[in-house]
Length: 332
Image (cartoon, rainbow, N blue to C red; front, side, top):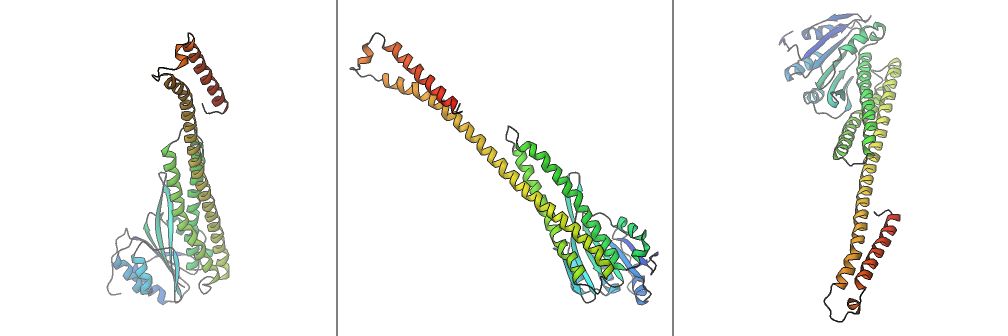
């Protein structure tokens, strides 16, 4: 073909033709249109990673992709969605993986038609080479066509959500110990907030997958046969389970943050009570001393022989009585 393109090896991960029996043969991008021109039951699977615009333009020419779909694929920051363009589909999904205790998010854009499947990865995303290898071990299923490859990719993405949810659950269990610790820690609150933020981001990636897999099983029957709907319903069930687990963890985190705030408020109240109790003990002798410290000439108690001893005894008795009362009330 004219205008032959030599893409960067880093962009083109795989460009493969699968025959009717599921056998594999590597091809070049220039051979794609030639393969599709012959209706022999084969299909093409192309895997890309952060391709240049010229490469996407080349794919548009080879697969006859819609302009709007290519325009979306040019930009990595797309919301998860599924769009139909004639007999082909454009699907944008968010991927997630845990690396060094942090969750990294990426995107995958998928073009699927009757005889082709194109996966375009952006950002942090695991390679789909393992997915391709899994499909090639099941040639009888791969012979179904590109929709089986689509199922395998979506299933791989959803399965990668599960260990992240499990890791979040373990982190929450550890933080519960810190929540009920005697000393208040700002670090605990920060970790709770960060965990809830990551869960919210994960939910924004998972929730739209229910709509995408639901549409694939109910709406786009021209691409998805009855046999593949069973597989996609399984992906839908996994997505639903991850979404429910995410919602449950978010509710637990909200409750944990509320409990932490309540415990801090109670602890502050206890400190205020103790300060008020000791202030009450100091107020009694202060009042008595200030009363008899006034310089009036006619105070009959000042002239008594035992006035000082009586005053000291009265002060001690009042303070002791207050101490007993406050102690029983647990104010000191």
